[in-house]
Amino acid sequence: MNLHNNELVTLLGILIMIIPNLIVLAFIFILYKKRKEADEKQNQILNRLESISNQINSIINS
Image 1 (spheres, rainbow, N blue to C red):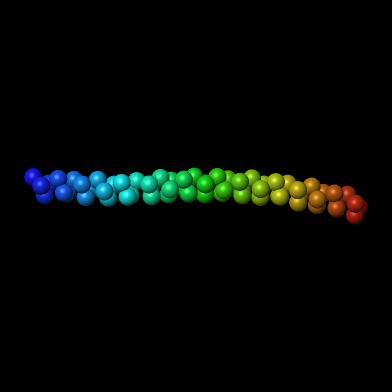
Image 2 (spheres, rainbow, N blue to C red):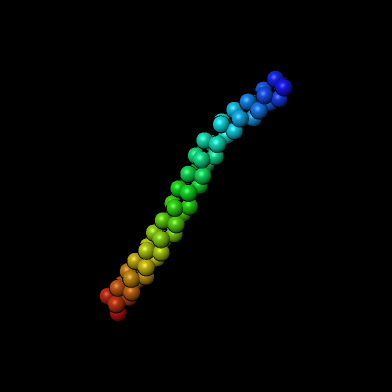
């Protein structure tokens, strides 16, 4: 019975150590996804600005 309790305590200890790490990993993953979305939006805006700049330059040069 004592060995069984020690196994449960060990398992509980391992879970207590792992769960905070999983929470941190989930938080990092969420931040990574949000950063990736922000980068994509920034690239879209830069592409639009470049297109507008090219149109203005073609008007000026014509």
